[in-house]
Structures are given as structure tokens and as C-alpha cells.
Image (cartoon, rainbow, N blue to C red; front, top):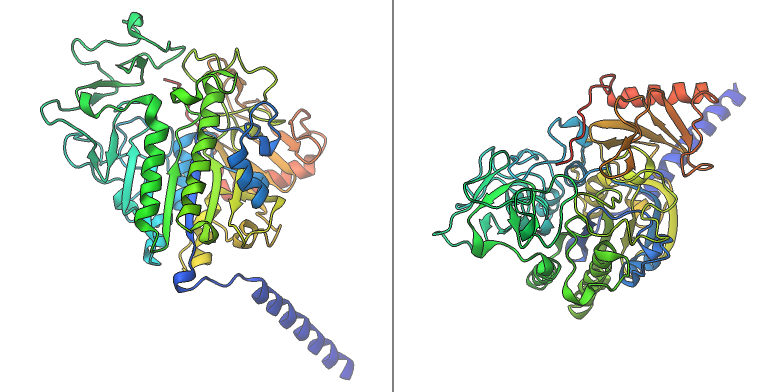
Length: 518
């Protein structure tokens, strides 16, 4: 009997100790004025191997490297998706994009993808006393289905938690080619109203397809509609001439707005979502960066983006904010070379490998589609390290919520705050990855890709899609380049992976949409 009582007491002691240990390792929320500023720097189509901090040999990116060398450099950091709009949706909502059937590459006239009643990262931080702003690429839709570009555009970023917004509506290669500040088109002349249509051209409006003599940048596939600044775009646009941006000054414009936001809001904690346009097409480096990389415009705009990061860090230092600012750097998806224009990205690539040792790229279910540079930096608070922990951008909402003492969480967002702060290497157990409505599972060292119909190679962009008639199973610890399909070698592992995948994803994952590049 005494031995039984002793055993029970021992179990209770161990359980209490374990529970106490769990409590001890939970991060304490930061109170009051000590709450850090938060800046998310989000590149566009930047690959895992595009930075010197990630082993890139042909491009020197000292300013982003500074973040990596002074913070946590994640080797298993993921966007949720291999394309832009879905990844941005997950970043801001903490929800897997495949749960929203409309979360795919959006045209410039798409309605707002995020429900205005939905919890978002800026909403959560706003409720904790933060000033919130977005500068740069939006591409999450605007309005409710019809947008009058000549009146206030709503709903948009301001209706899902951002106090301030200075954005492009979609992408640099899509119309309308104008900046929008807090719902108003910048520099719009009411006597020259904007009209936009993604199906039909307007009378007497030249296009890239019909008027190649007007082009300074030739199109390869799609990108042959309205010409703006000598560059053919996706979609048709008329009017708004005084409001149209100059592509070569876009990086400077967004940087100036980001710096101005920091200076205006420096006396309160703030969130700045700084969404770079580089190196998405069309690649239009400013004059001081033209030819600097020796790799054509794609290399040049990556160097330009690195410079922008450096300038932002200078501003934080000059304002005395760097030691109280958590910076997250990542990319919305992996790399692509020819994404619609003849800009010598392929011809001048040389030995550079945008995806590093990873297979695939943008649009792909292979690793290079979603495994991206992922860095957290907080001077004096985060100790430099490299982490192999499995993390995703979808986890930022819940993790940052824990940082500031909020109880808000994203539906698929895990609390990895200690991991992001470099205090733990215990990342996610598993992660659903998405590429153009197709999904796969990463769990531990393994990744499983279900069978999908469609070509294994997207010939327009020359990227392997990940499509196959058979299940694919790879051990990434031993085979990071995904060259050996182990599905038949390890049937029990495959069975387990499928069960985990279907528990999260459901069994309707074969119902996909074919990718159409326009």
C-alpha cells in the first residue's frame, strides 16, 4: 500500500514538474511602452538561393545579410503557398489559404479577399495599442466586386486593420498602374478618369500585342495588353495619366513612404508591413542599379531591394528605434526567371541558382516553391543563430499575439514565439503547402505530394510543377533536392503521411484548378 501511495505521489510530482516547466518556458507578454515595433519586410518572388546569407554566390546582399547574421536565419521557413495572393492572405489572417476557395492569383479588379469581420494581424495589434501601416504591394483585392477608381475605394487595407495604406492594387505587371493611399488614387485628375477592364480593350488604346513598336520591354507570354511606360501589362486601362506610376522610381517611392510612416509613428508602438515589389516582373531597377549585378534586371532589382532594406535600417537607427523593433524578413513564394517578359533573366543567370539546392520554383509543389528566406531580427534581444525549426508565415499572427499579450489566434497559426525569438528550436510538427490549388504535406524530415493531373513541367516558365500520376515521398534531410521518390520504399511512412494530410486537408484535395498564366 505504501509503495502504491509513493508511486501515485511520484506521478503527481512529475506531472506537476512538467506542467511547471511548460509554464516556465512560456514567453511573458511585453507590457506598456516596452512593446516592440514590428516590421515585416516581404519580398516578391525571392528565392531561397537569391541571398548571400543563404549561400547565393553571385549576388551580394549585405543589408539583408546583416539581419540574418544578427538574428535567426531559418533553413526550414515557409510561405504557405507558391504564389503571391494566397501567401499574403495566410500571413495576415493566420489561416491556410486553401480554406478560402477564392484565395488564388487575383486580377487587379478582384474584390477584397479578406472578410472585414475576420481577425487579422493588424487588427490584433491595433487592439493592443499599435499604429498599423502597409506600404507596397497589396494584391488581396479591393472593393466588393466593382471598383470605381475615381472615388474612395473600399473595402481595402484600411477596413481589415491598417490605419494607413500606400499600395499598388495588385502587381506591377497588372493594371491599374497607380498608387492608392488610404483608398484614394494618388495624383488623379478628375478630368481624366480611370477605367479598367480585364476582358475587353478600350477604343484606340494601344496594346503590347498590336503595337510592339511602342515597347521598351517585350512580352514573352501574357503581358500583352495596355502599354504603360513602354511596358505591356495584364489587363486594359484607360485614363488616369497623371496618376500612373513610373516603374523605375517605384522602389524609391515605397521606401520613402515606409520611412515617413516610421517617423510619424515613432512615439507609439507600430506595425509596418513593408511589401517590396522586387524581384517580381516587370523588373525595372532605378538608374543607379542598372547593370550593377551583371545578371540583368532581375539581379539588379534584388540588389535594389537589399539597398532599400539598408536604408530602412538606417532610418530606424537615426530615430533611435532599432533596439526596440522586431523585424521579420521573408518572401511570398519562390523564384521564377522568365515570368512573362524578355528581360535576360535566363540568359544572364550564369552559375547563380535562385532556388539554391531546392527543386522547382514559383508555382511548384516542390520545395523551391514555398521554402523561402525567413529571418527574424531584434537587436539586443535575439541572439544570432541558424535554426532548422519548421516555421511558416501563417504562424506570425498567433506568435506576435503572444508577444504583445493578446489572446487572439489565427485558425491555423501556431504560437512559435520562442522559436522566432531564437529561444527554442521546437517548430511545427507538420505544415500543409499549397501551389495553385494543389496541396502537399511537410512533416518532420518528410514531404508527401499526392498525385495530381497536369503537366510535370510548366513550359512557359520552365518550372517543374510537382504533378505526377503517383504519390511522391521525399526525405528532405537526406535528399533536399527531391531526386529520390521513396513512396514505394517506405509504404508505412507514406500511409502515415496520407492519414495526417487528409485529417487536416480533407479528402477532396484532387479537385484542383488548372494554372493559367496571363
